[in-house]
Image (cartoon, rainbow, N blue to C red; front, side):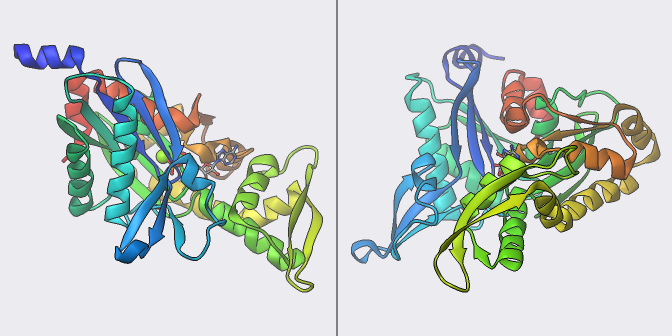
Length: 348
Ligand code: ADP
Ligand code: MG
């Protein structure tokens, strides 16, 4: 490593970014901590003064506008299903988060940025992510795939000749991956995750109670009394919505057993993805997983008793990572601190 490299490594404010479907987090190497944690949402005004569209707000501010916007303003989640649906909006979001993070750091050397991207995004999408980071002021950009970052963040022995399995359940996608010797041996990514659970709650409440509720309410119900496997003692919650028959606001009581029922189908799909992955795993690695078990990361790992359900359906030990929501960004941050590891685990 030459003098400039060592110098810039020391003085620059390198960052790692978890560009999630629900949340974007930024880790700073110099602060050794997470310096930004905001929803991956952009509020866009359409056809503003003859222009195509204009970004009004990004992150927290934009999420508060979700479902509450007048006709001309739309709140967009640009990577909702784990694919970059809207390049331009993704780029403005990424640039905004990068300048917000590097702006607070005041370094005169441009940062090296390690960005974590959904598993299996296309070459074109990767290039778009890289380019937006470069134009936001990066000196160098590395891309790392989500399941790999999650596994590093969860403290799994990814560099060893040992099979590890991580199930990263985010907002838009659930990634089930087997990792060994610093590489992803097999990964299955399905578009069934937190958002689909919210949708399932909305549909259930509509069917059972003729009540219309919004996405935010559904998410609140999921977090409060959602469960993948019944609680020992039933829980309940009072929810408000719009009566589909009378058209007026209405309040009902909903129980944890009902939510369990509502979540059955999407959760079965997730369990099936885990089972398929186990079937496709080479025998030596599968036997490591039988011994070491499965680790759950991502916001979905917080769903009550998800570990119990997966344990029951696979017969394998299942643990929840210490901080499921920050595993990916912490794993990308760890790679940032070790250039050899970064080069080994990054993707082109
Ligand atoms: P992404 O990586 O796709 O941005 P995250 O890992 O940040 O997603 O997880 C976001 C998802 O986790 C959302 O669907 C959110 O509703 C869900 N989530 C967060 N906390 C909980 C909780 N306590 N119980 C169930 N789901 C949760
Ligand atoms: Mg994620």
